[in-house]
Image (cartoon, rainbow, N blue to C red; front, side, top):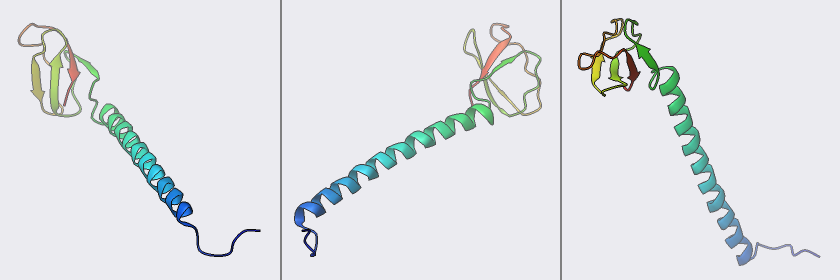
Length: 96
């Protein structure tokens, strides 16, 4: 027959342990979800990591890095991407 009184000390200890454990698991899940959401935002909205070629009009201002020599161009939105001024390469990655 179960006791009908306050919880024992052991019960409280296990309960706290579970609360701390699930709190840590929840915090870790939130960090992972936040990191994933930020990466998706950067990839889709900011186009970071996307490849652009000479002659394309860029939709967002930012830095575009030459794939061959690493030179970084800073362009405003609506500008046409020129060839790399350092090596004349035609492909760039959006980096910021």
